[in-house]
Image 1 (cartoon, helix red, strand yellow):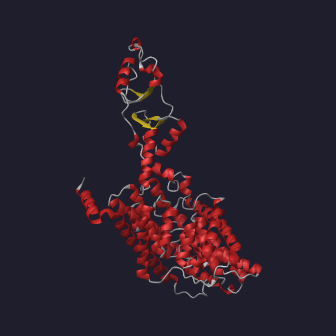
Image 2 (cartoon, rainbow, N blue to C red):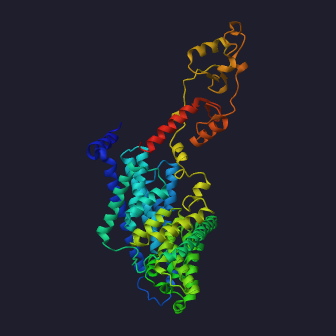
Image 3 (tube, rainbow, N blue to C red):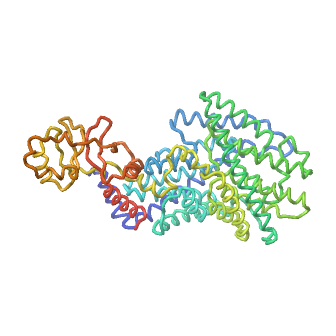
Length: 589
């Protein structure tokens, strides 16, 4: 062990002690909460500096130019400074868990923050939550690897980082924990819950300490829950489910088409033009959209027409309804164009935006058509939670985040009703969330499948058994009999002088002749050996190994490479034993 490793180990044992996971989760909470504070304030500062001084009645032609400038700055930073891709933060975390055993590059502790601040601050129609979650997860991963924690604890620290990021950015500790459990789907038990709680509350307290009562959303409960509105909340959930389906499919369609453009310059020009025009026509599409959400929460939906060509139509309810519907439609396009053309940001804020505007829109339509007086603000809040349930396939996150960040726990019933209805609706058409869809299509998603997750952390090399008596194809039956007397196995690999597997001999196949000494010199191994139909490559992952055992029905499979070189055998019993051990390890039992 190197001096460096010894120093880290001693610090871990003597300073952090047996409660090192608690201490590390505390540190992760402080750092990720601080990162959330920095990013939110940086985005706010840039945005206010650019457009904060414009009158509400004036069109802002700078909307056409600012977004492409921000995306260009992002691209240049990524290409010449970071030299890596940091987009789609949550999907990147899922991929690192699924394929890289939780190893997230250290530059993600700051790179996604820097790039997303340019993208969003200059009007990119995405959210800061995915970048800050990637930042928090990278912090957790880096600390865990620095202190040389076991694999299960590395995953836990990633969860703590993500939890702290969400808790810090929204001042919502419960939502932070639910995000980790429901979206990242880490297999965490009650023993793991304490570190998550520590990170969540630490990050949230950090935000309270530096920002006081300032929040992203200000929701004042004016209209209490009315049970007679339950059918309309169910209708809202179904509507949100179909909007979620549109959200997922349209986002992937737009991104797929732009990604098909090979030239980065062409992609930037097309994406910048489309985004600039959309924001110029529909100013609420600028940035994350939290200002617009606050307006609908406070019954000021007509003010969404500020700074647009449609300012003079603020008194026309049907025009406002049409404008709201167009915002729902084009927010998804603007979001996808932003990321596909080179910007950095996530779908979290766009999902909240579309949900709030969609709920407000549906209540407006019902009120106009039926003459009812449904509470617009309540439906906006429920719509926000319902769309999160649909787009992210995370009903609990939708419920608790909407309730926690707005103080709307008095509306827990409609939040639950709408979220469940939205989730059940989209699950009928789309089994994967927008985060997991691409990974699932490539077969690279294991976090949402416990069996795959356990197999993923098992390695072929650690399962190979080499205590088999090897015989030559030219060996006589007498030589084979001597090998049998030395072996505790009933299977004998036949290997030539170059280490190439030529076949195998089963004890059962020669049982009738091994006691006939007259055949010992006349019979040779090559006469009754056979080449196995099923075998394992050293490069196979454990998913393939498990499939080969299942398809072959064999209890032992030879391990040979593409050239036929023999390495040993893997037994079904060894795989099962190791599977159970890994399962217990990751369940902290």
